[in-house]
Length: 167
Image 1 (tube, helix red, strand yellow):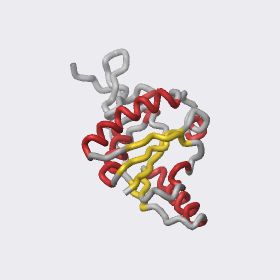
Image 2 (cartoon, rainbow, N blue to C red):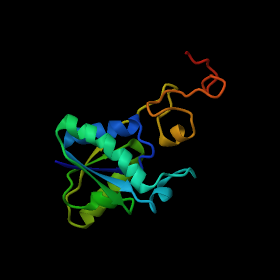
Image 3 (cartoon, one colour):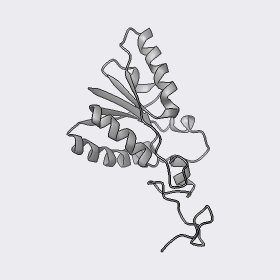
Image 4 (cartoon, rainbow, N blue to C red):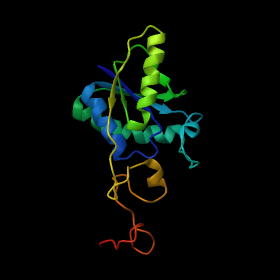
């Protein structure tokens, strides 16, 4: 099975890893990585995004581990449009998060209109941080959590939620 997924992945975190795990369980994986031009347009915030080359290097390091574990192949391709690679006929499945499921349905509409079979859409639930909020790259960049969802201490050695951290 040929599996597609896409995103900015800056930085990669456990929520992304859940997407990767499901994708590699299903088949060989092609990741559409937002281009330098598209990445800022897909963000819900103003934070800076690292260059495509830097994000691709970090992403490939992650994907290589999943590929070895599942004995699968992978490819990373630039994503120039939000619907990107998933409209291409070779794909069988699309792995999405809950907030991108609507985009997956839109991709299937485009595929149907083009005479291409729709994709199986696999929705992977969010992964939550220790404070019960979902893990996101923005929260990591803001210093609230690490890539695994652990609360990060502020300069006073206390968590950002006011609890003392343990040494």
